[in-house]
Amino acid sequence: MTPSENVSAADTAIEVLMNNGMEGLAGAVEILLNAAMRIERSGYLGVDPYERNENRVSHANGFKPRQLDTRLGELNLQIPQTRDCQFYPQSLEKGMRSERALRLALAEMYVQGVSTRRVAEITEKLCGLNVTSSQVSRATAELDASLSTWRERPLGAYPFVFLDARYEKVRQDSVVVDCAVLVAIGVTPEGKREVLGCSVELSESEAHWRSFMRSLQERGLHGVTLLISDAHEGLKAARKAVWPSVKWQRCQFHLQQNAQSYVPRKDMKSKVASRIRTIFTAPDRAEAERLLKVFIRDHEKSAPKLASWAEAALPEGFTVFSFDEDLRKRLRTSNVVERVNKEILRRTRVATMFPNEASCLRLVTAVVMEISEEWIVSKRCWLSMNENG
Image (cartoon, rainbow, N blue to C red; front, side):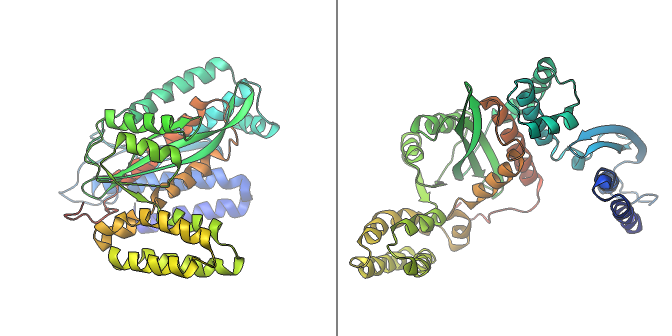
């Protein structure tokens, strides 16, 4: 697809929006998605349309029509084909698993009679008026098979593992409860990120975290040299039981947030936060420990609870000092999981509440699976590994 054709597709999509407003959103997306797939085919072939090049992989072979139901409405797409039959546009697949999982969650709520008026309206648009339990069961079984295969896939060596949890509202026995969504992210020896697994449990208790960690081990996870997480008591206890000899880095970002609970006066908060950041950004552990001693001494009388907490808690964020400076920036916090959690929230907030744990796990798995696949195919390494990795 030539640059002028790219511009033409964008101009056409803009014109559709100008003429139809929000009603034309589906048409605009249809135009742009078709254009994106054509661009992707050109990239696969190694040539632009009508270009002659002896190094081309294959040849274009027309288009195959396909209708796709989305939250925007029905899209009429033209799937680019190649003569070798080896090409399929990834731009079409991205987001489709999580879209299907979200639609199924809404449909389940509808057929179980627990949906709100808003959910019922959305379900009507997405799934049609005749949504039956048998239809939903067949659709969920098909999607669950692929998601389960991904969750149970074999793992390998991951030197660094990040752990975190968030909560989603799930209906259980006619009562809505907050269920913990446990997520693990690993960094390969080459420095690339990958979501290792996810689980939906009733809480962040030690038993649930330990079961989740054991499942990662049983799938072949090994070579872990550092665990990065918050200091939730259940997670800490499970970590000691499953990986007793692996170093632990307590998330520095959470530590800075936790410190504010011990600051006695509002006018002290910004100064305390700044001093803790200075401790964590020290050039080495020796300097960090020196700055911590000064911090404790300065607050022993004015904020004794803060001083006592800092003496016990802040050293748990010093483990990262045993790694080179270029690794510390990535390993000092669990922010990489926080960003994944934000993406999970972006999709789950549409449902607001799940009809059961399986429905929640289905959507969460679809979201993190898509994120992980994007990381894997990316050519850029997230972490520059060296002898410390």
